[in-house]
Amino acid sequence: MIEVKDVYFTYLTGVEALKGVSLSIRNGEFVAVMGQNGAGKTTLVKQFNGLLKPTKGEVLVDGVNTRDISVAQLARKVGFVFQNPDHQLFSETVEEEIAFALRNFGFKENTLNRRVTWALNLLGLTEYRKTSPFMLSGGERKRVALASVLAWNPKVVILDEPTIGQDHRQKEILRQFIVQLNAQGKTVVIVTHDVEFVAECSPRVVLMAQGQIVADGSAKKILTDPDVALRASIVPPQVTQIFLELEDLGLPTDVIDVSEAKRVLIEHFEAGER
Amino acid sequence: MAIIETKNLTYTYPSATKPSIRDVSLTVEKGEFVILTGPSGCGKTTLCRCFNGLIPHFYTGQLEGELTVAGLKVIERSIYEMAQRVGLVFQNPENQLFALSVEKDVAFGLENLGVPRDEMRKRVDWALQTTGIEELRERAPHELSGGQQQRVAIACVLAMQPDIMVFDEPTSFLDPLGAQRIFEVINQLNKKLGVTVILVEHRLDLASKYADHVVIMDDGKIALNGSPREIFNSETARLIGVGIPKATLLWQLLQENGITLEGVPTSSEEAARLLREVLNQ
View 1 (cartoon, each protein chain N blue to C red):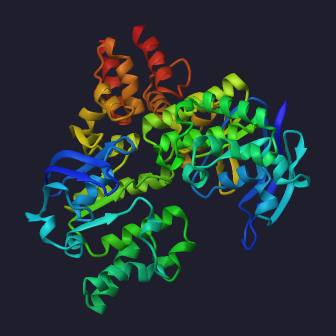
View 2 (cartoon, helix red, strand yellow):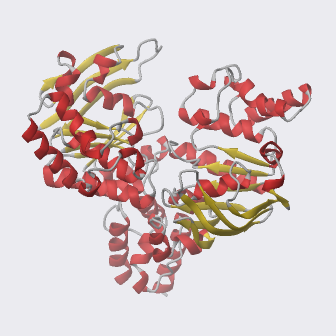
View 3 (cartoon, each protein chain N blue to C red):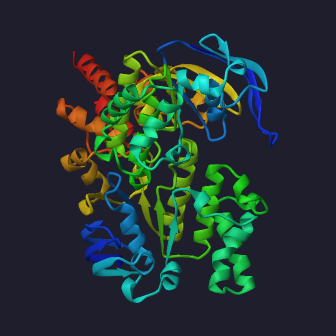
């Protein structure tokens, strides 16, 4: 679905944000791009929908080079939800906000209405249909931003730091939502440094540091390797930290999730009693 | 000795139809490290704004009940007086920093208070040193990383030598290692200098090991108030949907399956130690 081939990117200020990145994301994959502040995570995912074009190297989306296609055409396939919803929202009502992109894509009025209603319902925003997005809370504005992207049904959804400013319950709703989108066949890419959130979702993890990919693999493999984590300013999940300290007792160290931890410990106790 | 005391504090923002905090009665002892948490919109930030007088003096609206901070009746004092005793560090340092050098930013609050030049120099040096950013003195704040900026923001507030420092989700824009470093700095201020700390935080996995006292708010009221162990182990915390530390959650799950540890862990180190004891038996 997305092919990144030896991409370099330098901002106009001279900052070299990507230094030879190669990555392949298959159709229907769920990927978390992680790494420290300034590692190049957002710069990388902005290449996926053509918001940024490589200084060197190339990015192919569905086989098409991002240099040969407009951002508008790419956006139809790759939806991008910004970290800060205020960078994205501008309309007078939530309904208008969601309809805006659909209108630009040339959807007919009755299809457009159907899609707006569907997206409002999907994200629990129906009661705010006629409300100004700016009257809503931060968490609700993030949902409006997400609804406005999902409304046109892109194949790939990119979410930049979706958990910032969300409380525990909202994060759980978001997690279920993302997992559901992915199960429906969408390719989902999240940019995040929320280790506990990633541990609960368990996607493929692409770890970046200083403009390069330093590790790529399952969440279980990447998040439980303390050396790799340290290189990218990531702290292993709390559950993993417990198991890393108990390594000498013959327990596994690749545990990231609390229910898995429970299972492993109970098995260990039962084995000890026999 | 109590440094913050509120009795039946209720506050309604101007033009709001219902109060944002209701009947809040809370005592914070001098030198405590308090974590204030709860779902978005529960009134955490509103309560913090009362501590330094932004409510009612800046936000106006209607404040009822009693509020004493650092021995002062907040309602009768000005923001200027309260600001010298209660420092507030925001979630996003970019909202707080504006000068062209770190040193100037840190000195700004002191200039406003009319602190003499020599004293100002001493305090700026001390604040930079304490937060570990002396080498950033001449740098422009907007060119620094998020973690460095947050340390500058802390230094700015620290230079005023407040008795109480309130941190409103100070790490939500930082990566985990950056967040851990900020928590370490805050912990040092509390343990070494005796500053009373109020930390508003959702990420309890990282922060709870430093706290003496946890307050959970829900729908404008205090829902739970006590030691981290009592709080995280309570059914109410789970029901409100507070993200209790995974170490405590694991303890609960094991307990339900008949495995009992000698104590309730709130950090990975503690959980590992308690598990080791049981596993070695």
